[in-house]
Image 1 (cartoon, rainbow, N blue to C red):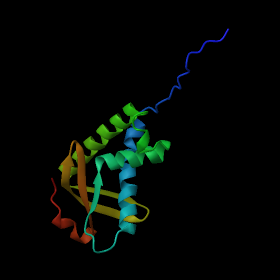
Image 2 (image 1 turned 60 degrees about the vertical axis):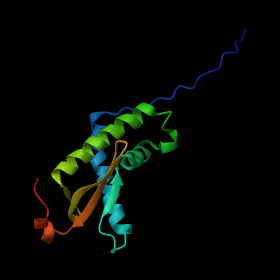
Image 3 (image 1 turned 135 degrees about the vertical axis):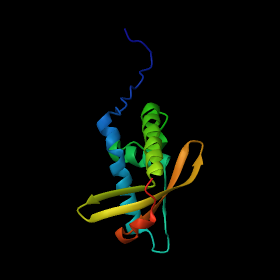
Length: 137
């Protein structure tokens, strides 16, 4: 005896554990370093939106494209929320800096725009010599 009930495919959504959320700043750093190497010298700042960072992070971590947002609604929502919190933190600090194998990286941070919760920040590459021009908030 067979039944004609449709089989629903269950999509297992990845979990957003604290360790996963803690790796989002590394994704932002990679995005900034990538933009510096690609950008022309005439451009002074790099614009990154919280939603763009969310999409890049999810694609690089799990291979899930932004077009699959509906299927992975909770994943996109929780990562997007965390990216906004992270961006607010950097905006309040007014800077982002880190040291890696290639040296010290320093960026000034300013709010470019906010559209329907999508926070867009501008990151200005700074040299260690010009560090004094940034405010220490």
